[in-house]
Image 1 (cartoon, one colour):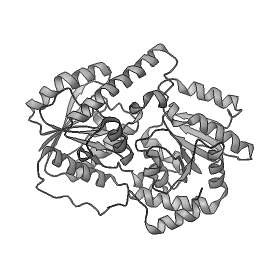
Image 2 (image 1 turned 180 degrees about the vertical axis):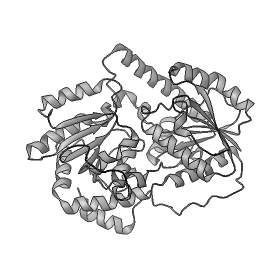
Image 3 (image 1 turned 135 degrees about the horizontal axis):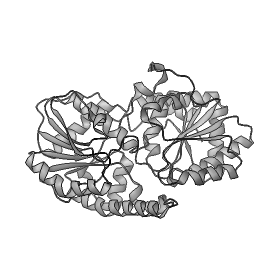
Image 4 (image 1 turned 90 degrees about the vertical axis):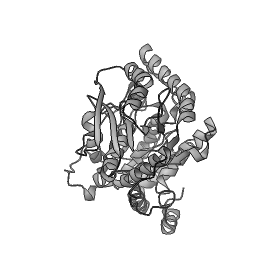
Length: 417
């Protein structure tokens, strides 16, 4: 079988979790698959991310790194179908939620972002400049128009969480039989401080709480600042470190809010940090927070757990599903609840250790090799082609959807609200 994978959307250092997802997926696919051929569409700027010695993989450079998004969209919708036909592709895989207007072969599409399903309520801030507001609104319109068309046309749909699959059914009426839920993995060995040989000197002086999130309003960083003000007033000595890219000028608003709360000297906006440089930020944190309104998966939660950091999440979207009982939940509707949960973790050693233990076990169950094996099963099923070689997959039935009975007992004892 010949599989074409569209990697054109990836902009190194800018695509966030989407880049991490595709790089790890392809690395593991190319490692375990010994029979299929791959044609990966890349740009001059992202080609190095997918480099491999596998002779069954061709990296086809389509665009240079400076060409506009409009050029990419024109290629995907008008030139790509012809390329697929000329190359006799059996299956086209799109990892970022859209398909060309027509296809000469079977297809699989991954839905990774739920923001565009409820964009108006979850991303009210469009940036300060007219250009920024125009770009974000056109982007939202494009995805809202194309997503239902893509879902109807796709042979199979890969949802990265049960929460995502539920939203797709509710919003678009997609047939459950057409949807496959396959979780992403986490690079456990790289994020686990005990298994990593990299230098572990502190990147931030003094104790701190960590947030890793793109600077968007749906991440509720303003509520994090309010909660942090509350715990500082109660004698907390920690800093708050926020790691994330700022694409639409929202950081200026958050910095002004931090100054208004008289927290300017206690809050550090670290900006965008490459995924390769991210582990030390986790290793030295005493607590990790991710309290978004909308998350289709929430990879930083698993990265924090792999690093041995206690985690607090919001009780919304896919976050409780991915945390699986190994994180403390916070209700953003309850005044001071997030602040109370922060104090619980930082002042209760038994609770903190319990969260670390549960988090480590949870993170271990999200394995990229398993993700790649299940993806390969999905590709074969969509193309209607039976694999010649069956790939052994570890028995992880239900392990990602639940904790063990022992874990549940510990969670009940140590992670009660």
